[in-house]
Length: 454
Figure 1 (cartoon, rainbow, N blue to C red):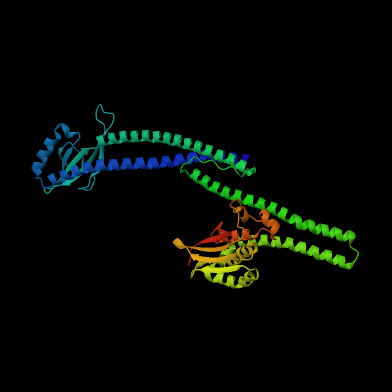
Figure 2: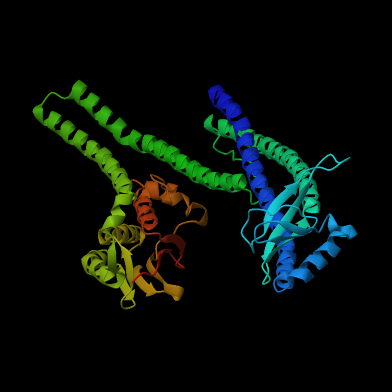
């Protein structure tokens, strides 16, 4: 546990750093995209104005061009909107742009002028060269100093927002990390208690849809199943110890008696036969336990196929009818046609045999035992075995499904090892069926409900 705690402590800062780095990178990309789009939009607006000047000066005559550019160069806005006129050789003719740039005519370009007297910085412009039909070049400029100032302000604002976002992201990540670590510590402490042997404890949940809560709920469901299985194992172990005590005691007592008292070979033969009988009882009970384990094996589902319950019950009815008549019991069969389920025919046959054997065992002469297969509502199919015997008390209907459980009255009046209904319950679980024990008024009714699959 200590090494695991040290590993977690080493991993926690890494998680925060990764989250912060991912957020910072995303924010930088977003802010850079915002800056680029804004700058492109403002430059596009300037270019649109320049293209408007192209249309205005393209057809101007030589004299009009020189006169108009000279007039524009003397205005107050001349610094932000400079103009110049040049001949085809690049000689300056008029305007406050004194040099013809080596740029393609008709395409906007960037240029700068040095700082003048009393100025700390130079000036930046966007310009375009307009070839006229009179054989001149008119250069139109537009100041971009305002755009650059806006860009500087935007960058500062974005950097401030980015710094604030980093602080908020780091704080949020640290808070979430602390909350998650607290939940994990709670779960680890509770898990340690459970691993210590207290299977009644469960992982803490807070009733939210958080991933940890959902995972804890899943683990708690698994712990419920584990607790039930462990309880069943304990019950089976106690049942085995209790149920095998009598035959093993008889076996040991018979062998001791034979050793002390027997003198003739016939006496030894009787003692050996008695020991073999008791050993067969023990082996029979272990065989039944192994059968239950085999039934519950997942591999058995590979042999599933469509099984006609109505045909299955007819076969069992024909097999057991002579036995029922010999005991004076009326065996009845009632089925619908084509009651089909997906399952293992051997397992289903064995389960019905166990139920029918119990029903015949506990039904007195003159009573009745019934077999039934019905097409149920909403695609569910039902298989039932009912009798007119003493029935099963309500308080024992869950207990009788546990291995080796036998009620006091049955243990005294009838032979058996208490595994028949456990086997039937195992078959039901493998087939995804529900097993219900009810009253037949009088007697007992045991019903298996299958999901209808044809």
